[in-house]
Image 1 (cartoon, rainbow, N blue to C red):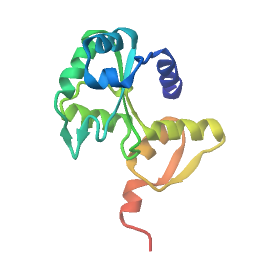
Image 2 (cartoon, rainbow, N blue to C red):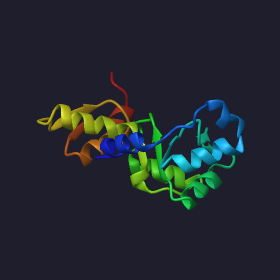
Image 3 (cartoon, rainbow, N blue to C red):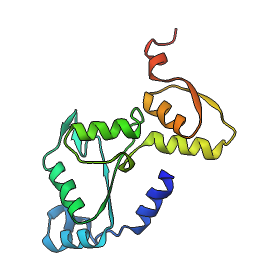
Length: 154
């Protein structure tokens, strides 16, 4: 499951001794970070891109990490996009990524609902199509969603 994969990656990653070392870009600290961390998790909105514009040097950094054999995950608390939609957005901005690496919050929401309420067959969604898509992937039908909610409730 995506949640299990993220937990396993999180437990395998090591963090450099001091944040200041990385922020200042000291060579030894960066080398240590690149040597000691197996995976890198990127928050998306405001970190990789802002207002639909890719921030400087992101694509190059991602390519460099890939060349070192690092696992990459692109996470966001935005639930309006499914994995596929987040991947398409990132690729459209020039970030090389795969669907399996993209983890919007609705992935965790769908996984949680399936595990906490295994008998759930249908839910009403007040939210975007990403939530609807990820629920469907875990076998939960839904009503509502972006299309129905766009007209507003009277």
